Image (cartoon, rainbow, N blue to C red):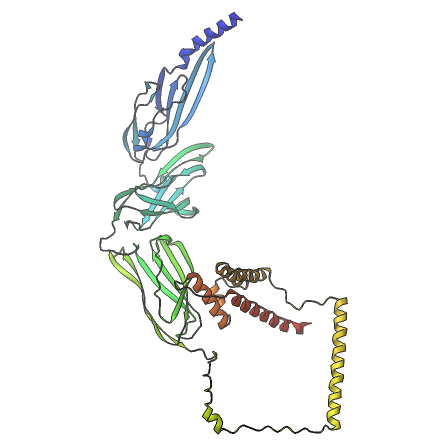
Length: 543
């Protein structure tokens, strides 16, 4: 037992020098390298290292760096134990020149610095290149927060086995990829290339002169029976970003073109009191994102109630430009007859082509509102007669003179009793047969979605919940084949349209509107029953 313990102590003493770090070295797998070509940096320590690693943060100032991977191995040869720990990372230089990889320190030991030479790529013509990158920025001169479209095209002239295309970089700018990449084929100088296209949205956040660094591609291609590593990098672009003018006021909207249009339903210039009008405004802008589009302020008009409806924002790319749209709908409800002028609507924006503030304008519009001819007017109550008038008027004298009944009168009375008895007998027999065989329901089967929406309206009316009631109305409109509630509303009765307008006022208007949800539900249920009866009358002749 003592011998075994003594042997373990001797072995531990002999291993102690091996565990300590006695040498630290750094090396690269390529030197010189090309611009945009990845190379591997390896830092290796002879000896056991626990919880320590070299500081590589200084490399990010000169190179594009990847995460550091750590590995270790231990070997015993002829009773002698050795241990090695290594750290590896991928580096890439975007510029040509001579660079120095600094020394690293681990456990008190330092590595030697490395002199690295980065060579520029030869511009020997696209026809002789297997892989190359083209980039384009539209527009190339920007204002702060103006959106530009950065298009990257990777041309591949050989079979690609695998590869990686990095994202572009620019200081003080937001860069986001638009959609997915597309693949196509092009002929360049008589050679067929597969082209991978990516589009990026670039929005600078500060003014000044910046460099837009292009993406870098690294991958492997097949050449015969061999795998070859390849790389490509596009040209850097210098971008001038202009500041927001001091004289500009309002929401900042830099664009090359802004347009404001509107649609009316109904399109007539003359409407009736209580007839809802749907006004749809469309704001289209070039070179900005959909989030930058400002909300359109519609002024209130005396004699009208205005309720905001649905708002939608869209964004697309066309011909190298970013196009955004804001579509906002409003419901206008005329209250009193007369001639009204809706004021013009102006949206300020900054024209980046001529460097001047302009306005997207909708001109004023005149609408004539007429009284509803179907509305029953209340006549004034008759004036009560004075006592003097009562005394002067002669009171009518009613004379009741009984008449003798003939045999024809008695026959008609008897036939009436007979018909009443026959009717009672038929009703009794029909009721008895209904108990034996259940009667088929007269109701036309309705779509589950429509029936569920009506139940939701009833539930909301019982609990006095305007929000739930409005959502149920939208569901009912969709169940009847209408995408928006304002389109469905125009085929309803005037009374029902007015109740829906009151509900919108209670939800959205600054003036609190009083709405009775039970009346709204009764009108919906009555119209639904009327539609079912109409369908029943149309289907009965088929049987």
